[in-house]
Image: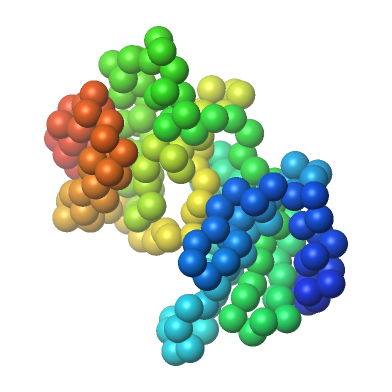
Length: 201
């Protein structure tokens, strides 16, 4: 996908009336635009970094395209921008319809026993396809209207030529467990998920 220039004036016009969804100490990160699409800003925070050669925005675009080619539901990229500030790029995309598992887990009648096989199936499929998604957590897994599980926020991802080795499966589960602990989801069956994935690896 070609990168086009987005001036500050054009950016201001694009985000007029938009809802700011995410920001950090460096500034805005994600906007929900008036047309329902998402604008995600990517900052290169260090002058010399791997992002200089391959910006995270480009990885985001390539990863989304590759996931779609593998049949994994994900967001659809529409535009790739270079902003006036050299360290800023942006991606405009159609969000993946549905609710995250984190949102669904907050419902009163939710029971992880009913969801664990589906979740384990998604993660097992990623691992067997050689996909290492470091940001794999409940907030980045979406249940679509077609009742499929898909992925969002896909910049931090690697694609191997073969199934993930056991050590990477364990590392991925450690990241996932860290998220569960930070969110204080004490009822999440982490041990059962680990058993489901590690006994089949």
